[in-house]
Image (cartoon, rainbow, N blue to C red; front, side, top):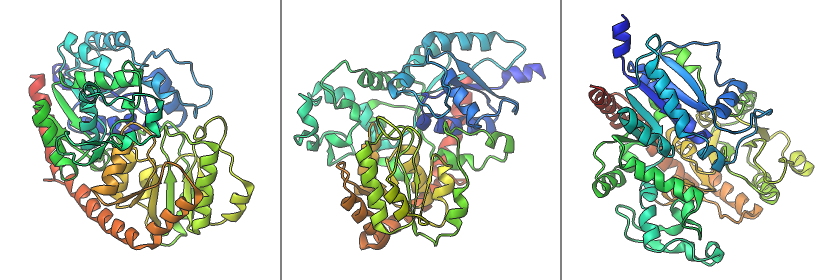
Length: 479
């Protein structure tokens, strides 16, 4: 029996310690566990403590073959569970030394689980790649994004070589971002503003720019690459990336949360990934609204708005006269708390509900939700696609601009809000989405993509088959 246990494949899963990266990595870990893998899921101490405090992880619940490890990150222990570190701090929090020591300890524990046989690491945790080499462990780079964003990140070096970094600070406002890029395969009509925002710097040694370059360079050395998307959505771009960068093993296995829905393990499904405590009372409010009447608003876990932008979004919602549910997390507003005008609260009393966090997929699947005002993070975008909910897009940074571009111009299920937020524009796009002809067309396209996304994860679907192939290939790599 002990010999059988030691022969079991063992995946160590290492997400980038940020909400949008932890969630899909957790789905991937659960899926591998359901296929017989022993799992060690690695959090930073900061993230692990927050997940325990929000109830996402219950240390009292033990799941055979699914373990958590927390490695030191050097960040101060938060007194408030709703406090989040700066994205720069999160990205640099995982130490190479801490990971190496963890794997060494796991492999030396003959009374514990089997030795690590593969490393599933977020592409942006590039420090992990050489550790895989050191221990002879196959390294799998996980890119939690769509094909267009993946292709954009893989062209950062070429963009730098061709001189597309900002010449000066004026480039953000003088029209330079409208420059068309016509040489990236399978991506016609892409503009500089659609590409990863990390290139919007005058400093070629910028920290986040370097993080992205390292993510690409280490991924090119990886044994395999995983994308949280599905072929019907991104096949042309993924094929072009495979060809240009000679990527031998690339697997599109999304939406990962939808594949996870097929796991009949209540204990496993009890593990959540939200760094904020979810509120549930609003469901009763949604139940009282008519089908397709509610505008759901959520700018994700990282987006920061100014007090003035908060006010403009608020009055745009109020003046649209449509019911709305708005997620306002504690650190949404720069420089202070999210304080809404008493006049706004009085004006929208009874037709608006505000929460600090929620189980988003549950909201998007609710029949009362007819539109989603979003920052276009990939988790939110993919959940919206799977739920068949059209989007009003207000991207903030990183890959969100690319997600917005594709939703609005390729997939046809989105409409962009100008970055210069004005209440009249917010009111106008909400009314167009909920009442206008363009909104009808967007809903039609949204339902088309919903069917394709759900078919992809069914038995025989593209993502289902791709995940099967991934598992078989991982077992071959182990041998």
